[in-house]
Picture 1 (cartoon, rainbow, N blue to C red):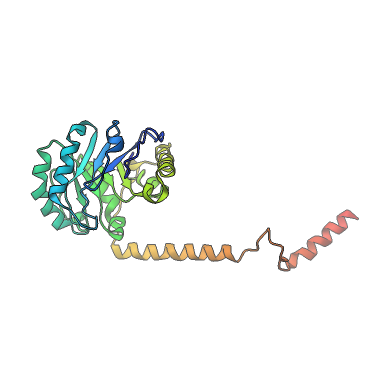
Picture 2 (picture 1 turned 90 degrees about the vertical axis):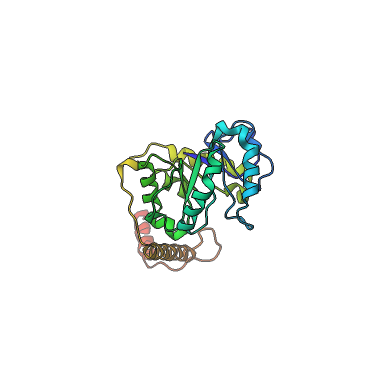
Length: 265
């Protein structure tokens, strides 16, 4: 699995894991490690504050044309949270991007489970959180069976990377380095990739993905949050072993002390 980090820093200078590449986009200034040969992909910035701008995207891809050989994919413009609108946009925008020779990524948005894949090279799992947790694994499996490469966006933790190791996922990306710091973030991502590559008893081909309803996902998430709150509450009521405050009286302690006294005598 590869991880495309949103950074223009020199990944080689940071001794980054070889599986760490660069996620770039129209608002990116320097090209950083794209210039030194790291694998890269480009988002279209549909989720940015100002939304997608076609002219800026084409200009951005033009400057990347000379690094074509190391490109994993470029995202065809999508409409966040709307699969039908995304598919319409894809058919409109894909021909111009394909003419430049880039591999094209089709974004899977809410409702994509009911649609056919358009001609593309990569299925990119986007969508809202509840929707993609309900349908994401099944869609990735379906994409792989269709001969497509697969990518997952918004991956910012070891837990998610380990989860994707059990799905049909070729690559992922996230903004982890933006809030963790580039040096520490890149180091952490390297450890995530090593964990994902570690031998395991079961792999994607040993299991079949299921679909859930989004209501079921919300119920499961609420239950997980409640379990975490209960676990934190249990920890907060435990006595502090390093506190100078006296410990609460333990009924069995008197009996144990008596046993120790008898043994000593």
